[in-house]
Image 1 (tube, rainbow, N blue to C red):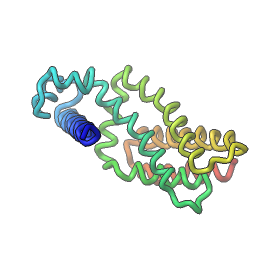
Image 2 (image 1 turned 90 degrees about the vertical axis):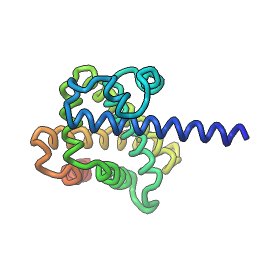
Image 3 (image 1 turned 135 degrees about the vertical axis):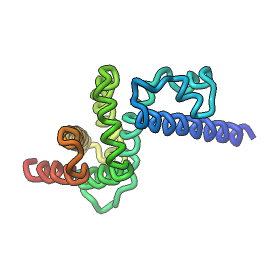
Length: 194
């Protein structure tokens, strides 16, 4: 009975978290980040200001949570990748799968919002190291041979670097080229040069 209640509580908490994030993102897109108050986010999500603070400490943290979730999604996609793929190819496929889930127009607006806020931008940059760790762990899970650990860690570092450069190129040109296309080019360059 306790496990059932705990599972139900966790699902409800996750549903509320997701609702707050989606509501906030829509408000940020419609009205701008600075113009959207914390109270407006709480009211639109159907919760009190006090309840909001049970989930997030600030509006900034909502943006930061989006970046943090990408590392988990990429690691999960690597763990579920085609078993016949080589590690670098599994990561490339996982990245394509994850970025395809985000509408490019909204992703571009969110990237711009993150770049305007120094604290969020610093956290975004720091999150790349967390992505590397999560990706490295996922690669070790898939290819557990201890002799490959260093090579797998290097793949994680290079792959996150490819993601980072692709995202920077994509944002710099206002999303004119698909992020998936830029990722393909980055991973092709890695295969050629490594």
